[in-house]
Length: 330
Ligand code: FAQ
Image (cartoon, rainbow, N blue to C red):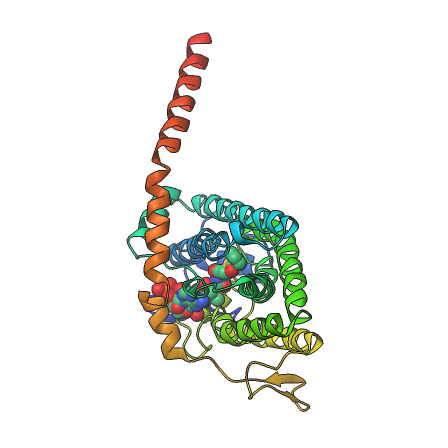
């Protein structure tokens, strides 16, 4: 359905006949699942959409370290601490792969970070919610990484080569993250009465914010149709959300916890679960900067960036000295 269409930010959907020769050639490659590489010709809006999405994705990985990093010193056992430490480090690595992928499109990491700090680039809404106790940390691994994986598995087939390849590696690590989260959460769900209560409470609080991770409904999605036409996105927001719900409800049932939404019901006809949509007003408030933790997250990121200036200066000075020594030796 999308193969014949191309949409630009200003003029809406372009038919194949309206495309320039370059655009047609580009679209043919996309339609034939030939990856677009950094030196290939690409429409300017394709490049900009990728920078926006990959940049936002990279920022999410980095800001996403904060709610979990907060619990490293309070992990209940040495084993849980080691696992959490490794996971949080992985998220930093994911940010780096993604910043590198975005840099191939002609934007620098420093520029993207500046835009994030100025509030001009987004990161995932989910990280503006607090992690109040240890059950929340299990829930982040299970439910948040679980949602991230559903999206990222699809993105392994995205049309831009460097982004698709970053996704392959990230997905492997994310699977470990989700498994450790489910394992930690299961211990809580099968623990004492109080631990079980904490697990249920974490599930109830995180469920709808996790559904928001897939973005607004397809009808409200601004970039969805164009991104699908360019195969930047290979599944729509609503398709991915449904896939997530279908995979997660049996996991909730297995834990013996109450489902977090009375609207959840198996629909025989569609062979999917029916469920309630999140409060979209809350979602739009959060992405505008008014969620429970937006200000804290940005304050902590900016402070970390400023505190790390001496490290960046030192590395740069070292690299310059090595380069000068190499030139002198030649
Ligand atoms: N949060 O037109 P659409 C992770 C914005 S990684 C904030 O539908 P699009 C790993 C959107 O930017 C999680 N903003 O947008 C981890 C747009 O605003 P703009 C991150 C959102 O791009 C786990 C506007 O709403 N994953 O968790 C959100 O076509 C644990 C209209 O929306 C990715 O980024 C949101 N949830 O579809 C780390 C995956 N949703 O830019 C640590 C890649 C929408 O015009 C611990 N991204 N917006 O001002 C995507 O797949 C897409 O960008 C979507 C949104 C699906 C998120």
